[in-house]
Image (cartoon, rainbow over all chains, first blue to last red; front, side):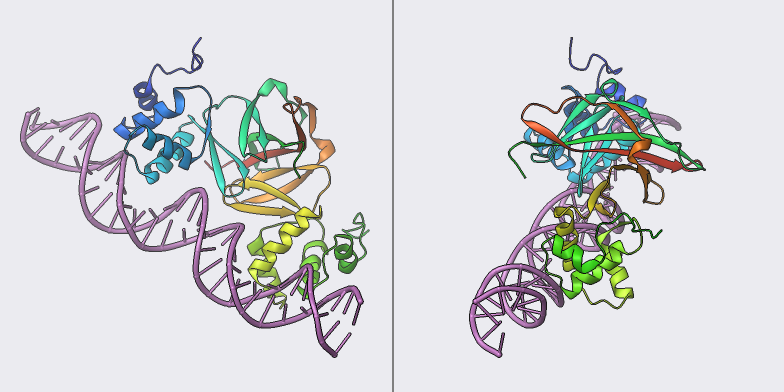
Length: 143
Length: 143
DNA sequence: CATCCAAATTAGAATAATTCTAAACTATTG
DNA sequence: CAATAGTTTAGAATTATTCTAATTTGGATG
């Protein structure tokens, strides 16, 4: 079973069409880098670096544009755990995160493994958009 | 009952002594701004602004230094909910947050009101430093 | 398939939050 | 009250991100 078995898109082209985004050379390449190898957590700089390594000519501005468009289209989720650095998560299903404070690495936790038993109601006039659970861990020998 | 009844320090001086930080004019003033009126969530810029309004001469660099020293001493907790902006929370007890995405405001949720029933174990060699639960809400008329 | 135009890309400048640096100041200690 | 280690500071530097205005391109149209 391939890593992307659960993904409903056969390829980058279909995915972009479904998101109503023109399949440009840059977006096609970034789509493949993002979704062709299982769930990932990348920063814009990292993805830009990967593109360069793969000889895909794309500017950092376009990487930022694309990541935000993908978030808007529900293809990515932005994870905020570190002040001044955004991670983009290819897993948009129900799940939470371990965050390794020492290394800055993120790891998914399936939604079912965290039992949020009880939640207070959203304040009047508002509704819940998302509940983030972040388990911050550190190596035993640090701090 | 005053808002700070639960705080174990009678005044700014004691608090700084306990944290082993020299009670300088700047730190004393910032301590009062932070802790003299109940639980708060402030950014460095906000606190700097309040100091200026109160005619306390203190540089932004010192505000940052002080906030981080207070976090290190366990007097404050840094809350990360917004990429590129850090909030400092005077409530260091067990609690979680509502985050109003539209306004950028934070609101405490007492720890007991969120039932995190079940947590996966920390990966080998690591231990849990903290569990953050952030409930992101939006006004019903936006997005 | 040539033309057109809105959408997309881009380099580089601009912004925002934060950190750094090195010099000047100050609280404590003897 | 002098010495000194800790603290503050202005301003420069850094980092991540966004903006701008000009150029390029995908895809529809004739």
